[in-house]
Length: 476
Image (tube, rainbow, N blue to C red; front, side, top):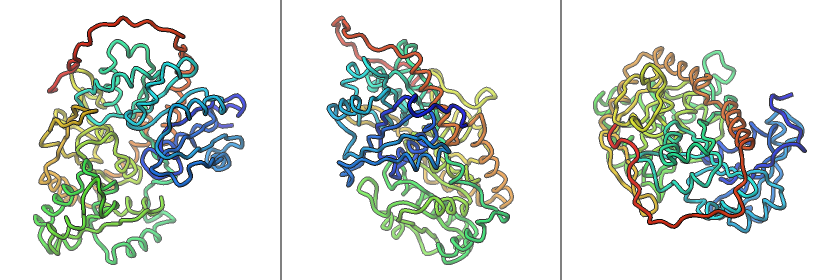
């Protein structure tokens, strides 16, 4: 019997508010792993959001598929597709008819403003749980009401956990707050060496993909959106190729698995055509691929690159590490967790005195990463999110990071990649799908145990609202 198994009729039923778990977004991928990894312990109803969802009005029972993936025979998993993320009346109906015991939401809090506005009503009956993330400092005091509306805050990065505590202040003691890093399915992403049964398939895939045998492959796997800074990566790669010269550049390629054009990003084909000479090989794979193909891409690469100026986590880095491939990443947000920076002899923790390593305060890190420290921090924002650091990497520093791995012997690249694969599976890192699911169960069960329904009535003294001031160091 699977550890922590509870018979179907005795399980708590969780309403999961996020992307449709059948989709391929980062949110959907992680939510799907959590559902699969906890189906023996909870029953699930996913109100699955999408833009103009083609299945709206339908209902899908995924219990049999969950049985096969979870190794049980009584899973209870349903998906209710919806365009957008829902509304108060629909949530009320689902809570009543599905006999919901808790709500778990996952993604940017601004999608759930309407839900937080009725939290007093909801939390009189059931707890509100939030698998949350925030990309950067200053600690977003404008999220205070969102965090305060939750009984459980599971931060997917160490930075997020620290932000939750800083923003809530004394109110944090009344919440369950825990660290639940993203976890990757080891059955989907893994190292393929010469002794692996898929080795010959990998070699054929490489030939079919490139049409020739490149010796050095640098890989990008993420959306073509502005904060991912794909054009900066291309610019850095060009500088690298110019540095090593046209003859050596013939053996190198930058593989981009992303959209060629995106309204939220740019026209990458135009960027490549304009700044890249004939000796600068950039190939764009603009199509949906299977997990096997994606694992092949990671295995083909010397390193996976992610240079985002804001990044809550960076799933492609974790997948790359799971496949035994080195990473190049901008030192910002949750990507820092995967780099395993060391502070005072231990894996780095954050507090009010030291909020992030994006200033490059500490330089010791895991062997599997070549970090790029931001050259500029710009304080940007919008009306709903007035301030957030935008950590921009210099494209010339990106070029140096690529060159660092290019200069390494093949054996050293493989050794470092395998060190990353070992660490990401460790009890310290907790970055496998199984560990992520176990962490969710730990904190969700704790929330159920400690949950006290909100009283029917509360009294609030009306006072002058004073401006919120910075609660942590500005430069650390």
